[in-house]
Length: 196
Length: 176
Image (tube, rainbow over all chains, first blue to last red; front, side, top):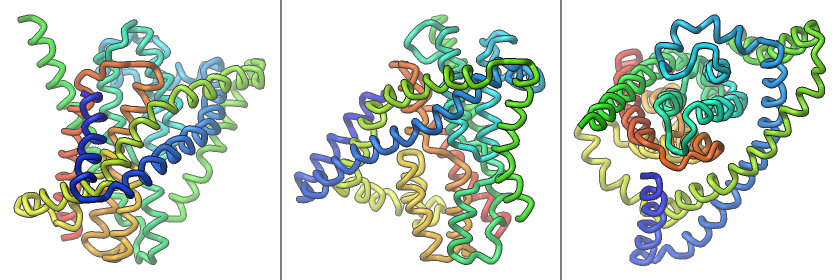
């Protein structure tokens, strides 16, 4: 599916440019896009190194397993395939916590570690059930304080920059719930298909 | 507001403090462990690069050619019938595809309509309440070398759609 989407976007764009004479813009966008990706990846090094280093210390100090003990009842329900004491749990929880506090750059490294652990569990290059659940929750964005948006609103002289915090939390909660439900639905559909 | 800002500025240093205090108390070689864990970060960022680059170039072509805009113009009327304000449609469509583009659009909407207008509030809520699905899937699956994404993309996009509807309904109810 991702192959189709990837090639599809480029093909549609180029064919559209042929018809509408926007080839110049395409050329420009092409290299700008590549440039942006490199800047982004290089920029990621700083946060990845820092947070992965710190999280390794936290893991060795036993803080990650403490965190997963605390929230175990909820998370074991969400991820029934992951053994209770598995390090993946700790990373999943750190990722969720970082997201909740709006620490997007701390959430990514922990999320990647969680994915690594889950890959070891499944031992294949196909997305496992837990991975899909984990990522779908991530894409629904668990935010308590949307800091970037608040900053933009302040820049444009909002009388109440934080008034959207409530609606954002409500919307996020709703989206996450929907994501979990849709994920379950698709999982049961897969199971049924396999039985046939 | 001041409490919120205080919390967000204190939280990262406090996490660092807690981790280092506990680790030192347990007599762990903190610096060595940090360096060892950090090394992984370099490898990760480098292995991510091709995944990100491929996806971003493809999105850039689609946007640069004007095809994305044309598509948005095409389906805006349909969505307007469903009660989705036409000004917000481009943001709703771009949100799962490109984070930087979405942030740019949100800023633009806020500056044109004002942060305290209905559209401004709606854009703010939408920007904060869902994340860039395509980016997240690319980064996480790319970093650990998962080639078959299964249902992840489908489920993610369906959830995004529900999230957009939820934002509109919630903002309408709360701010009328």
